[in-house]
Length: 116
Image (cartoon, rainbow, N blue to C red; front, top):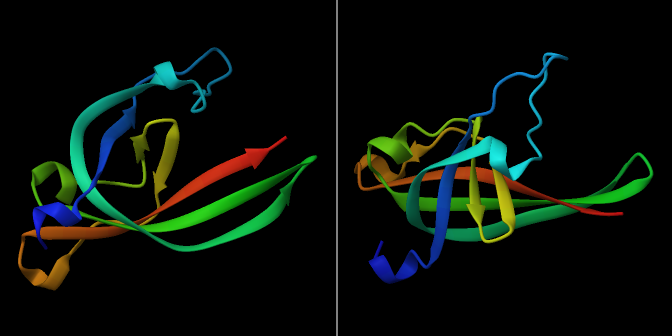
């Protein structure tokens, strides 16, 4: 894949907050996430759906993400996420080596948006 195809810049983040007195971590607080790396990638929307989440309607958008293979991208897990501006993408699958060439990895991530 040519470098020009990797046109979206994302932050690779992991949860870094400690557990509160109730034994929980607030994953919705931006300060609880730390950026591990910044990478260029290609995002292709693969599908979306709307569903009821209690009193609100939520939308879930699935993206296929391709980025250059390196130790950081090969080690991505579902406990990490990507951030692009105000948009957050939860990693939904482990990275797969594209064509077994060790040049690119591809994985699925889900973007969740709510409408109160």
